[in-house]
Length: 152
Image 1 (tube, rainbow, N blue to C red):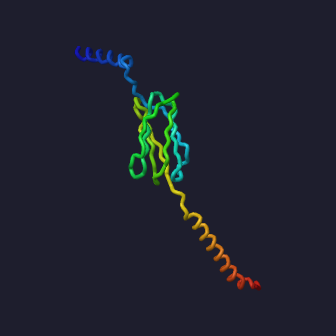
Image 2: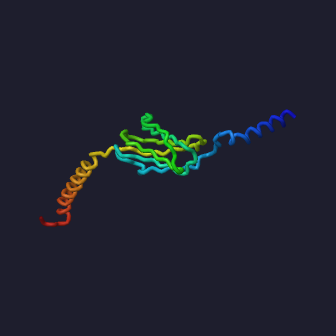
Image 3: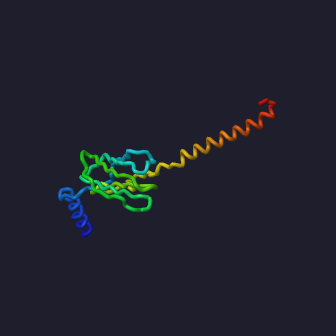
């Protein structure tokens, strides 16, 4: 009998929770998008936009590869959408986590991207490759001329 009484009291309390101002807890149905590809240039502006939100605020945490939390903000949600931006000034893999305040979160509410500096080695490497290919052509041409009995 005590079990039934306790169960009835618990059922009544659970029924009053939404009336008492408690926020229902459930999985988030939010969808996040980044304004970039998976690799961005050092110093680029990166924006994350999350849609399908149901609460009043969302938390964004930007973490660089070295584990430093670069920025953490709580943003007001307007019409179910919120955005946050950062200028990526640390190279490596970044993670931006987003959590709707007042809602239970899915296991992976994050996006990752890589920040890379534009390297001056690419044009130098291309130039060296061009010289090597041209030199190889001249060597082969000279050696093959005798093979095919071509007069110079």
